[in-house]
Structures are given as C-alpha cells and as structure tokens.
Length: 315
Length: 280
Image (cartoon, rainbow over all chains, first blue to last red; front, side, top):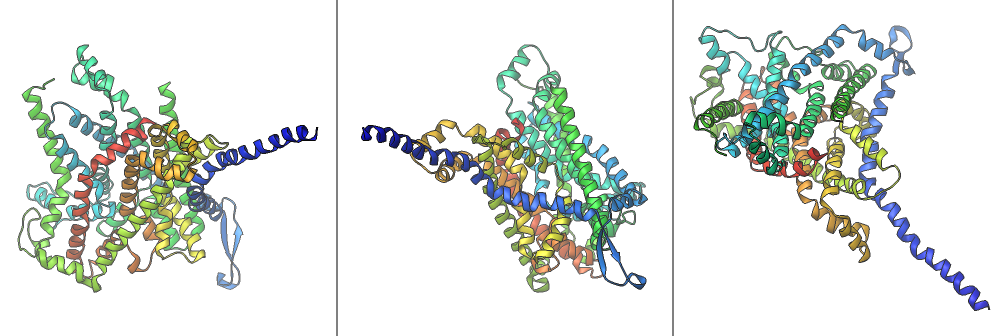
C-alpha cells in the first residue's frame, strides 16, 4: 500500500519540478533581454529627467553679508518657472522657434515628399544618382554644415552675396530679419534628403498591382499620386513630421556657430541656447533646468498632439 | 508606361537644378580647400586661384601637434563603440518586446516610445550635472554612456523582429534544448541583420554628428570629437586668420569620406526602414 501511495506523490512532486524551470525561464527571459537597455534607460534617460525637474524646483540661497557666505539649496517651488516665463527674452526665443517650426516643418515635409515623388516617377532619369546627391548632406554634421554655409553668407567670401551685390542686388543674409531663414536653409539642406529617403522607402513598398490598377482605371500620374501614393506613405510622413518638429524646437548648434558672424544672434536666440547660457555662463542651474523642462514639455506636447491628431483622423 | 519626352526632360532638368543646390556648399568647400588664406578672401569662391591643397592638408594634420588626427580618432571611437553597443542593446530589448508576452510589456514599450519624443538636448544638461558629481564629466564615458541608449532603435527593432522572426523558429530552438541566450545570439540576431545595419547606421551618424552632448560634457580638447574641434578652431579664427584655412581643410577631410560612405550605403537605410518604422 505504501508504494502505491508514494508513487503518485512522487510523480506529482517531480512534474512541477521539471516544469518549473521552464516556466520560470519563460517568465524571466524577457526581463533578461530588457535589462541591459532598461537599466541604462533608467539611469541615463529617466533619472536625468527627474533630476532636471528636481533642479528646476531648487533655489540657491546665499547667507551672510553681500550674499558671499555659504550657498544653501532650498526648495523654491515654481520660482524658476515664473522667472523663465516672465523673462521677455526667453518668451521671445520661444516665439522665434515656434515661428521657425511653423515655416520649417511644412517646407521640409513638402520638399521631401516632392523630391521622393519626382524620383519615384517614371519621368525621372538617373534616379539613383539624384537620390545619392540629395542624401549626401545627411553625412555632414550640423555644425560643419553651418560652418560651410556661414562662409557662403559672409560678404567678401561668399560667391552668392558678392555675385548678387555685383548685379546690383545687395543682400544681407546675416541681418536681424533674414538670419532665421538663413538657418532654415541650412536645416533644409541638411535633412531634406534624409526625410526624402524615409518616404522613398515607403513608396517602394507599395505593391505594383495597386499602381497598375490605378493606371488601368484611367488615373493619370497626378491622380495616382494624390489618391494612391500619398495615402499609402502616410506613416512615413507622420514619422518625418514628428522628428522635424522635435528637431526644429531644439535649434541650437546653427545659431551658436553663426553667432560670431551675426550681431542679430544673442545668447537668448533660442530656448536651448538660453538654457545653455544660464547653466554654463551664469551658473544658474535652476533656471537652466526650468527652461530645459519647458522646452522638453513643449516638444513632447506638440509631437504627441500631432500623433494623436493624425491617429484619430485615420479611423 | 512610358512618360512623354517633354516631361522626362522637364523633370530631369528640375532634379538637376535641385542637385546643384545640394552640391553647392560641397563644391565651394573643394575649391576653398585648395586656396591660401589670402586668396580665400581675395578671389572668387567659385573657381581655383592658387593650388595649395597639399600644403593645406599638411597643415591640418600637423597643427598643434596633430590634434586633428586625435579628434578624428575620438569621433571614430565614440561613433563606432557607441553605435555597436547600442544596436546590440536595442536588439535584445526589441526582441523581448516583440516575442515575449509578459506583464508590463506595453507599459515598458510606451515608456520607450515616450523616450523617442524627448529632445536629446534637454537631457544633456542634467546628465552633465549628474556626471560631474560622479567624476565622469570630461571623460570618454561622458560621451559614450548616453550614446548607448537609443529608444528609436528599440522601437525599430521591435517592429522588425516581430515581422522577420517566425515564432516556430523560436519554438523549434527551445524544443531542441537551446538556451534563450543561444537562441537570441545565433538565431534571432542573424534573422534581423538588415534591421541591425539600419539602426547601427542611424546611431553611428547620430553620434558622429552630435555636437550638444560633447560640448556640454567635455572641456579637455584631447577628448573632443571632430565637430567640437572644428568649431573651436573656427571660433578663434578672427584672432588667428590661418585658422580659417585649417577649419576649411579640416571640414574637407571629415566631410568628403563620410559623404561618399553615406551615398554608397544609402540602400541599407532604406532596407531597414521598409520593414521597420514605416510599417508601424
């Protein structure tokens, strides 16, 4: 009797033991694969965001005569934020990048889409060559592109400015009214080809039968573009738009590199430049952090809002 | 479907004009790299005047004890090490999110997606303050570590892995008794190679072109990448005019090879994108 009683008991105890490692392995494996990225994401992505928020709520109090005594960190509430938004120069810098984005984002997306459609059309010769040429600037760092275009903006060096002046059309590409659009030109030059390539990738993925069906139905090239190609490359357009929004709001390197060439560019020209200046030239980390947080929040709201808007219209 | 001759000529002419726009700064750079400082300012920017190309190049490589070569090496180290490691990390995370059902998966994925929308420049400042406290600011790590985290890479490789790796293959591996690590390294990584190449190239160019992070993190010129080095030359040029020519020469050396590589490798960018992001 004892043998029959223990046999099933043993069987019961061995079955879970054999199955357990497998189930545990199945449960732990995804976390094992996630961990290396996850730990770094936590430390180098989420922690700095938290630290910036913390820093933005801190005020430095100096005690003693003339404020030369020991510095003490005290909780300042939203003080840094109210200082940031009541600073006319910072508010102006936000207005400037919003204006810049309002022009640059549509310009960039339309230009990239037109280039992609032209190269994809049957009328284009040597599409591979042109695609390569348009994509070249992507390999040029933004600051180096700015140094190059900077030479092309300075009178006396630039063949463009000198040529136009000789023709009786004096232009100032670095003046207060024009330098923002000179920067827009650099950004367009650097990224239009890249965005074009993302759109081309999706155009190539359109099944040939769809395009043939459109032709059989009598749709001309323009109607095919409007009713077949554009709706099908929509995800690529959304992706490039979101990245362009985030990129333009972060505007920093181009104005910083052009600053010595143009009196119109100050340290408060863009929000990023302003935050950088507060942190490294004025040692005001709290205000710098508040400005960074505001910029990140603005970029997040605009890009996320755009995603929601396009996501809803789809259904 | 043959387009009419007229539209062919029109479209090709338009594409040609646009190509001139994209090539103009490069053309100017090639011409300017052959000039002396005097003729840089005294002659037309559109044509050669004096042939000093080799002298200029020699100056770029020998100025300040050959610091330019050091910057180039730094750029290669930052971009190559950072892109390789971050691609592997993204592949593992993307695989976990694509092929395992576990609690919290969507939360993790949404966090990563949110990370894509956070401007990198907003992170650089607090990272600098954190690194400064840890004694990591102004070291190679200060530029390398943040380059390892690439949320967009995780996103791309999740979609790519979901599409390119069939579940049966993973099951077959498990039945054969292969460990999870082995399945990942010898089966999954091989099947997602085109996606890996795309993510690697994106990250490589991203790190190579980065300016804000090294600017914030580094004060020792020996650790500079090319971007930071060249702007430091440029910013001193109004006091030392020979630096204009060095900036141009240095830009020429860094830009031309990378542009050729970009153009040659462009099909890899498309390969990964077709399967990845744009299907999402």
